[in-house]
Image (tube, rainbow, N blue to C red; front, side):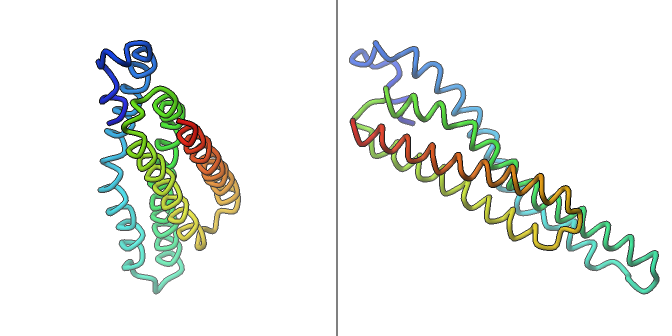
Length: 167
């Protein structure tokens, strides 16, 4: 929003290249994040289907466990994908913070905090669904990636807020 409010304003002609660079990135990411809402809602369905499967014989138990594990991985992949998508917005947000319309500073601050909170919430979903994962290698790799994305989100959020502090 702030990039669009800055773009095309004569007073901000000198920053147009920055806004023209940021707007498509942020617009694309927003479009990719919206479907993640529904994906997150249905992600746990596969696990629940597995939970309802018969488990009387060893073969049934194995099939049920595999379905539940697959469902948990799906329930982890959706928030992890959300984290990855959100992570792609930081560079554009730095541009907006540096060169966006100062009268919209609070909107940029809210956007940055919302992105940081969204990534944090997704991280919490990864963690909660990871507790019952049996594949230790998957668990290790996925937790490392999620933790790295979370740490970057904290740093970038602070960086953008600091830039805005100086505006």
